[in-house]
Image (cartoon, rainbow over all chains, first blue to last red; front, top):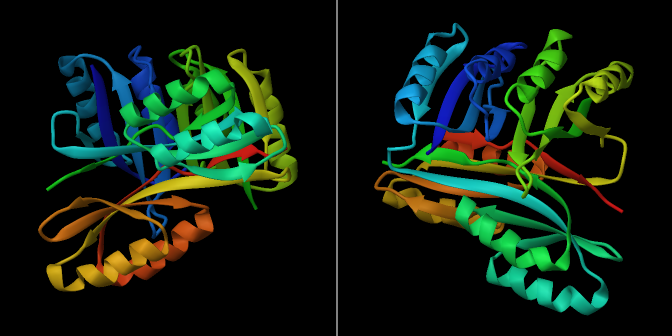
Length: 157
Length: 157
């Protein structure tokens, strides 16, 4: 099962290395991770997705919570939450196949953010499921490059 | 100056820890980082933003390129590229201030992805500049939570 964990941490050099080291030191592969600073710059927030069973992930979150620069770790997997991912895709698009790609982009409420002679760069945002469906449909056109943010998650009331 | 670095790496436990360790071991603070797998699952792609001068960042990218699980590292800072970030924002929104927030959301082509009794969760995508402007304008309403993906970047033709 894939777990979604969020963590608030001090924004200092070395903190990310310790967190990533703790998780991968226990043999877990981090599937996706993202980290960015909060507005005041002193605190950063991370979202991490890790495949693994509940019992072991519980140990990992407990140990993360003990790290000195970690403010709070939450496993959102079994709580009500929303999650979204941003993906940039460079897809082959000679003029003759552009209209078909544009149709897909509109259906998924994605955006074309760069038009180049032989390719388009597309931005798509949504749940992992939506993003995967889009990638599947666009694949036959030839995907040249992909960049995924990994899931961002937030608890609902 | 903020550098945007992209890296293609083998998707194995420990690789992310080595990369993050190498950068922070040299005293650089990683501002934002994101990593996600490519469709076949064997390779992951990362985007990292690090403040620092050109000369030192050049050394860091060279050393990253030498790591055994690193396929390719590119500093896009001085190349033509596009960059985008995804941000989720939970903002206080009692019924009387909702219309003002909705107006901002429409102006920035953002999206409301959850409506709760006293707050809204908003999804905004764009360049760092656009995202910062949106945060600035929404701030007076009371930001309860933010989650940022950090920049995703891709070279243009």
